[in-house]
Length: 251
Image 1: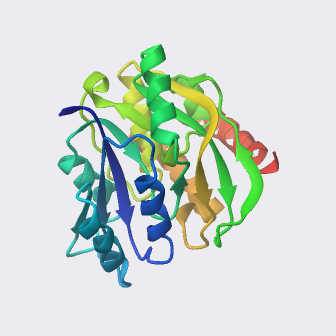
Image 2: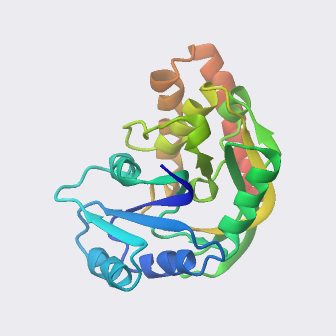
């Protein structure tokens, strides 16, 4: 594990339309001590070729093409297995970071001695136009608070694994990021929110989260099958999840 190095985890699947913008947002970071680990999940387009062009120019960009489709959770785990950094950050191949994201968030973590952080982010249309919606995050979340308010955006998370210990994404089809945050919290770590917009989330019509009903079913699956919550407590948490999800889209 290399102290101060940020390992950026990027799964890719048929992302050729957006991946260049995502990679460029990493290359523009004012904090330069990073490695970008792109795991392509057997794309049918030219995502690998686009990513490899960046890898040929900058040795900090590393591309791992998979020979068969394994899903986003397993693809992220391949990247985590190759990661050398003290810090693990996540960026999907259709989202972007502000150029001061790493510098600002790492300073926030060091100043307060936080191991698990996330931030505000803005929402954009598929073509990159901002919707005007900004997701504002709370100052902190505990395990039980997060069960009712799954507001942590994967694209904003940085984890200091020197403090949390190593981890892998739970191998479920969707909501695996939610399951991972809960895993880290169960180790005794709060998630701390940085009230500053540091990233942009792209609304893509083919994404799992674009299918709201499916996303809700996946959250319920995390409650019952991963966290083993009782039906009563799961229903209580799901009510909070639903209310916060509606509120997040109305603001």
